[in-house]
Length: 139
Picture 1: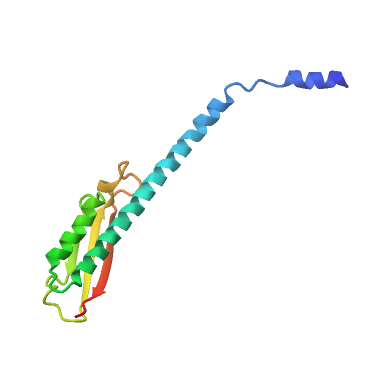
Picture 2: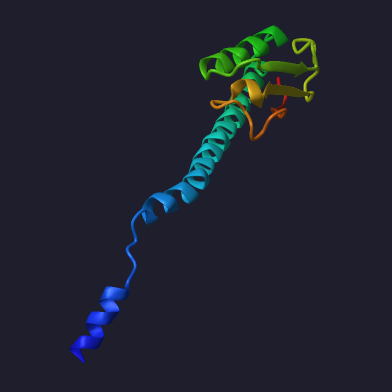
């Protein structure tokens, strides 16, 4: 019986270089997952930055005597603080001070993802993200 076990052990082939070949097969997949995660979290951060900028701009529009330039300035300041490149802000209506009570004021903040990507924007190339906030003007 001992002789049989010895023959089985002797017949096993050496497994040299298996780890290197497994790494060569798995590494591109792992790198792709890591880069896709970085791109996705960058896109989420950009969308959140646009939402915050639009919201803060809409809040400024409700202050008595505020003009659309005040709204744009506040929103662009937040976009700049968060490092958003080529961000734009649009305010509707253009004359906030002259708008009647009950008028909806809309602030739209937008930016291209490619210019704000950390690794070139290859995954979401050509996408423009935007956030819209509407608030009603009161007294």
